[in-house]
Amino acid sequence: MRKFLSCCSLAALLAGQVSAGHAEMLTELGEGEGEVVIVAWPGYIERGETDKQFDWVTSFEEKTGCKVSVKTANTSDEMVALMNEGGFDLVTASGDASLRLIAGKRVQPVNVDLVPSWSDVDDRLKDAPWHTVDGVHYGVPYMWGPNVLMYNKEAFDEAPDSWNVVFEEMTLSDGKSNKGRVQAYDGPIHIADAANYLMFHKPELGIKSPYELNQDQYDAALDLLRQQRELVSRYWHDAFIQIDDFKNEGMVASGSWPFQVNLLIGDKLPIASTIPKEGATGWADTTMMHSEAEHPNCAYMWMEHTLSSNLQSDLSVWFGANPSVPAACTDGRGMQTAEGCTANGMDDFEKIKFWTTPVSKCESQDNACVPYYRWVSDYIGVIGGR
Image 1: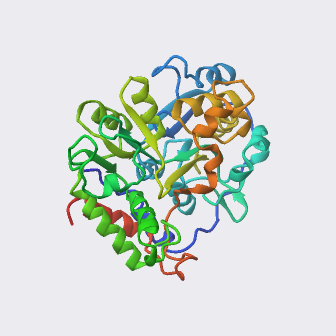
Image 2: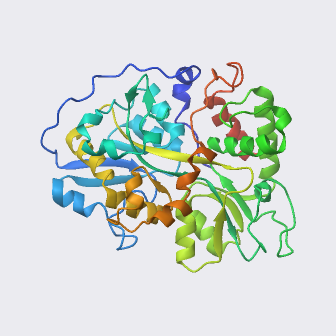
């Protein structure tokens, strides 16, 4: 079992609201330093090694002279831990990590005037609360999408319409129980998936946001997760291990990312995905710059490069996600199309409950919510059978 050690040192900060208090942001750029070191989600920064069609690193290196080095992280907690250790210039942080990084002063303000393509960014993302604090931007939007329900079509006569297939024991269309054939995400933020399920099925709990839970709501979510534990074969955090499990270990349903779904379909497996009637949590990822970045000029060059339409377009196809530059769906400079963006959920932005860091002072529950450090310790307990 993975150890969730990264966020507890920020517990005191996250007990309240995030406040700014960082060094002055850069006002001008110089020559590139020859390197940029990035912490990223799997599949986010490709140089053609996985599939020759997908390479948005080589052209950047040739143009700027900045060599790109990437450290893959499989959870937001791992990203926070790596940024706490230092030695990185950038991170592709999801909303449940970004505010922690800002609160811990691990990232610095970004001068969007030094990112020429900022004007092309989706207006819905420019001032998003997971990377903007007190009007200050701490990153450049990268990619966004839903956490989908991935399933094996041989176990289901039709697409499951509810997340109950991973929360409640039942006999599936193939005549077998789902017990031992489902997975759950190996990260405390999965508590929000349970809360999202309860919002639909137990409205009497009064949950208004899956990230803002009072004690009773939180206890109900933990109880549902303890029930789920009896069904789960593996808590996954490595996308490629999950892919292998669906190929070789008989897994039939799990929360997942479009990335895994696309690779499995590409390998001709009978895999599909859906967003059930309860809706879904999701992620909107931001390229953020370490407060002590050793290669700031190359870092800014990379942030500008990430907003190029062809990169956004091809990454959207590769990952099955939505570009932060809407023009990437239609301008023809990459592989993506308007139909492809629609299929990825480009029009469903308002329906997705984006990952964010739970704090104790929250609007929806009279400032009496369970903070994230509790999510960390309690989820370890759930996985461990407590």
